[in-house]
Image (cartoon, rainbow, N blue to C red):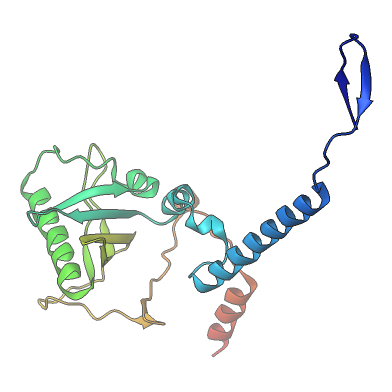
Length: 217
């Protein structure tokens, strides 16, 4: 029922064509349910089951949550150019600067980096023991760097991350070093340090039991 104005300036009730609102609501609810089901079906066919993982801003946060990491792109002319680094890398070696002065040591370091890039592009991956770059007052440090080649939309990229290491007591003349592996990953050892030079690591019960088992053998 609705009210309409009459010629006598008074309002009187009149009937108004009613729409099947209940049916429309049911249809809308049905469409919403279908879209939710369809979204779940699509997500099941994709790599990730949570839609947040298809949000670019989420991966920006993931990138900054990783160990020191970077991305390089291959230009149309074949040049390998640094295009991104995460917060951990900036903290470790300083902000990347293409205009940084190049002494003999820096040239040697960057030649190693370039060879690692080229090896990754040629073979899919590369694993290098090398020195980190140095910007500002941060000194060069020894690192193991894993780089992976990525192809997308007709372009090539090198994505990589690294961890700082202490050099072995000796490095022979061979070009490669045979490092212990666990689960197809390089096995790194923890190096103890005084409190004022250390980072606190919480010891899990499983690791403690493993250490006690090793000590009792």
